Structures are given as C-alpha cells and as structure tokens.
Length: 365
Ligand SMILES: [Zn+2]
Ligand SMILES: [Zn+2]
Image 1 (cartoon, protein in one colour):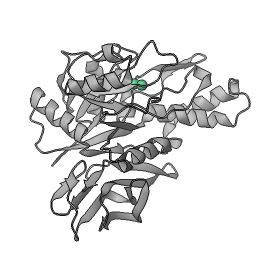
Image 2 (cartoon, helix red, strand yellow):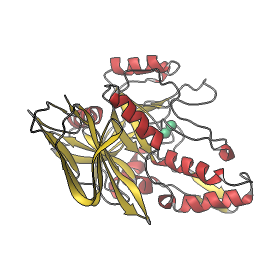
Image 3 (cartoon, rainbow, N blue to C red):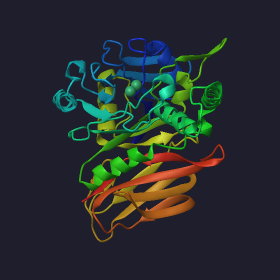
C-alpha cells in the first residue's frame, strides 16, 4: 500500500475563499501535502484539475464541491461531493435528492461539519447537518478544523456575561492566535453519531479537513489572516492508502485517490500534534485487510494497530472500547464478535491529551 496525505475541504474566490487554485497548491506543497480537493460553495470549477509543481515538490489538485440550499433559512446541511465530475448544486434543495444524484453521478457525498454550536457574536449559527433521516451518503467529515475553532469560541463564551463586549472580542483574538491550545479533537457528537450508524450496520467512511478560506480578520487597525491555508494544511488532514503509487497521470491518480476516500482506506490525522505517517490498522481472519475492508472472522482472528510514536490507543466497536493501552506504539486484539472496529490514538500536545488519529473502520463479518 502507498500512503498519501491530503486536504479535501478548501475554498477559493470562486466562493468565499481568498487565494486562487495555484496559490493554494503552492501552500499545500509547502505543507507537504500530496493531494488537495477544492470544494467551493455551490460551484464545481472544472478545467483547473492537475498537478502543480515547483522546486519544493508537487501536489495533485482535484475539484469537488460543497453544496447547500441557499434558500434554506437558517443555513445548514453542507454536503461535500467528491468524484461526481459534474455540477451538483441544482439538487441542493432536497438533501436526499442531492445524495441520490451524487451517487447516480458516480460521486461520493460526505456530511460536512455535521455538529456545530451557535455563535451569536458573528451571526454564526449552527451550520451542522439537520436532516438525519437521509440514507446513501458515503460518510461524515468527523473533524473540520475551522468548525472546531468556532465551536471552541462558542464554548469559551458560554461562561461570559457580556458575550458581545470588548472582553469577549479580546478572548476570541487570543484564541485565534493559538487555536491549537484550545482544539482537542473532533466534536464528541460526531463520533457518537458515527458509532451509532456503524452499530446499525451502516458502512460510514470518515474524513478530516481544514475548511480553509484564508479570511483576514480585523481588530481595530490590525488586519491579519488568522488561519492561513498553509497553517491549516499542517493541522487536520486525511491520509489514504492506495494499492498503486500515484503515476503523475491526472485521470489515473484521481481514480486512485477518490476510490480510497470513498472506501474509507485511511484515517483522520491531527498532523500538527505529530506527523501520523506510518500509522496502520490491519486485521487477519480468513482473509487479511486494512481500514475500509471486510474481514471474515475466524477463531484466530486478530486486529493490529501500529502508531508512529507512543500514544494512548483505543480499539472501539460500536461506541464501546474493547481494548486500550497507554503510552504504547502497538495494540493487538483478538476479536470475538463481528462488527465495525475503529482505532483512536491520543497524544499529549500543548499541555493536554489531544485527539490525534481516528481510523476508518475494519468490518468484521
Ligand atoms: Zn460548510
Ligand atoms: Zn466549507
């Protein structure tokens, strides 16, 4: 298997982002990413896909779309589309219709930042997913770094009396200068919902992303970009495993990357806390497999988790911890029951244990 690191939720001036594709690609190369997928709001920008190269390396840029119903008030239900290779915004009005149309186009849909908190100060209400009676979506964006930041601000302001006052604004600026001191992991509700869907027998892949916009923020005379693209590309990413190495050919490599994302062959990584390259979660029963695979259970079946450095490692089945080690690099478990098993790793960073790796499941049958 070949490992690649990417970020798949990014905006440009085609919607509400600041930098154009070429500049975004340069930032991605600087941050060491292998692939990026630009997802502007309600517009699929084609003819820009391809490899971008400079002296420091290369990155493959693909385009998807973040679709939502602009007529819905309040706004919600943001839907990330990968691999449909066509404009999906005409289907935005009906969430189930959008999911069905995405599947019919050969694409894969992920519910973006599904759990958010209201943030009155900026008129920023909850943009989470509100229509849970849908089916057929490929997965969840369990960790969106910008959404995490917004939710942390919302929590931080909960105990303040004057939430619109100067002190609240100063607090937000302090948090924005060092988001990594505040963000601890995916929203717990997102992990709970994922476990609930898996326990119900659904196959649900996950991704983790930046939602980079590069928006400048002003505080009196000072204006600066609080979350530059490059900073975010070093934070929460998705790592995928492909059966063949990337070839340099756009069509071939798009297929390899999109297939891996859709099949859940990889993990959500907080690379800022420590690089997650080399992480592996695999299993052996009647057959062998890795994340996203189905393995047939037998009496001697095992699951193995290998972390790149010592971590607190958990093996989780349908929301229950079935095995756990502290400060180790390996966890091996002999499963008895069928079901969806996933791995979580935590490491200390900025003075606290932080969520670090959230693997896609292995499905034991
Ligand atoms: Zn969104
Ligand atoms: Zn977005």
